[in-house]
Length: 101
Image 1 (tube, rainbow, N blue to C red):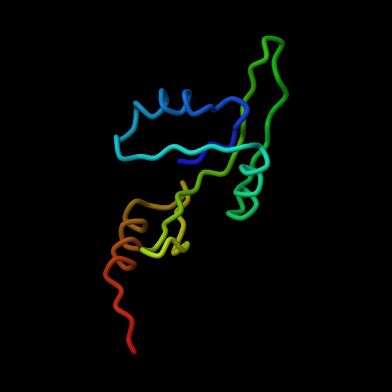
Image 2 (image 1 turned 180 degrees about the vertical axis):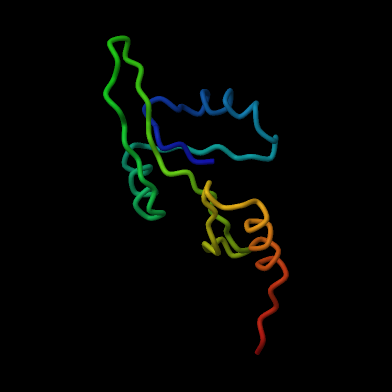
C-alpha cells in the first residue's frame, strides 16, 4: 500500500490505518517528490481537492492493484472495475506460467 498523500499520511498514521488490513500488508509513503515520481511511473491519477475551513480535504486517485513478478517487475494490474473471477484468472495464469524455450 502506497499513500498518495504524504502531507497527511505519516508512518504513524499509516500504522494506525493498517490495523484494518491483514498484518502482512506493508504501508509506504515518502517525500512529496518521491510520491509524485512514483505516481508518474505507475500512471496514478492524483488530485487534491480544496481544503475546507477546518483544513480537511479529500484526495481523489486512481484505484489500482499492481501485480509484480518474483523479480519485482510489473506483471499486471487490476482495476476496481474488474470482476473478481477475471483477477483470479490473471493471477493464476501468472503464477503457473512456464516459459517455453
